[in-house]
Image 1 (cartoon, one colour):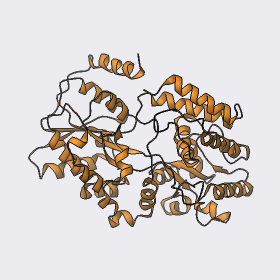
Image 2 (image 1 turned 180 degrees about the horizontal axis):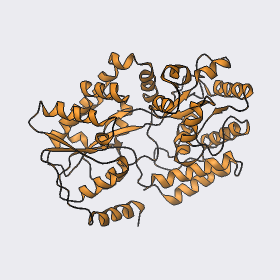
Image 3 (image 1 turned 90 degrees about the horizontal axis):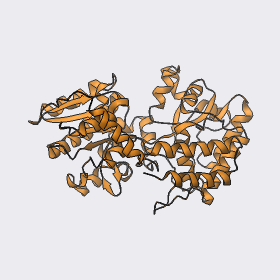
Image 4 (image 1 turned 90 degrees about the vertical axis):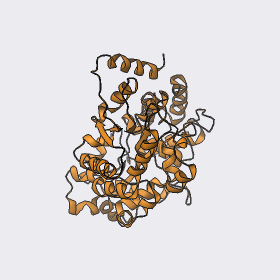
Length: 416
């Protein structure tokens, strides 16, 4: 049985022991944002704004993030009405595989979607050509750097090309042997998250347009060869996680690393004083192989989906429009730092005058979906890539051998 089937069967069995869920009347919006201390009041404001102007009322039903997918699946298999949900990239494939979400092209005009939301953001919610999710907030996983460290080696601006990047890494390494020039993630799932955009940078991909596994192409081998070069020169470290990178970066021991838009807040929570943040962390476009190439980044964010079992699909669609509207999304941005998706909201002075947000918007504008995003067994596939990347970095395998083994193992696992 496929892993998706095993997962869903387990949730079906669990559902038998869960007390009946009495869904409120009207439109039910589910997720986790309304449960977290920082976003709970914002979610309630959005609901209150809607309810004060519309006869069809909306009610929030939520759970902690770690429980959200399980609870959604249980309720989708029950008799309760749930209409709209906030989901992330780890939840979306399961709901798609269940055939549980509405093709939103049946509820929104294509011209409205394309006229108001960027192609990159719309692509974040697509599966097999269908618009199954509307982005609520999107911001690619990008790169950040320490401007004080870079200035100390002659870089007033971050490097724009791979050649300049290597030069900067070499100068950081020469300046202080205790520095980690680039805290590239080299273990767990975040290793694959960092590897994907670099693979694209070198002109490669895991799958081609026909879905064939091509990770062993020349570009794929070139990427792993470059990784080995960085490791041999002491520019990156083995056994580095995103958590490790964040801690070390906040201590001023790292020149560059990859993270989400919340990196500035994370840096502050790890001990950097608010007044010192501008000198400690800034976002940057990923260096390109050749001048003129588009910088690569992997899309990240939250989607809004409407369920097929919803009896209120048209009202739910209007409510989703309300959530991503300029008024609501700017309020959400000002209080949470999460970027809007509407073109008009992104052009709002409150966004464009915010240097951090403006830079992250530029990073996101050329973002691509993680290539494993829509597969229910993405955790298994991600683990395969991470293990082969790590094998190259520690010298256990040549780039050619690791690329060949990666292809073979991905073929056996079979994207599901």
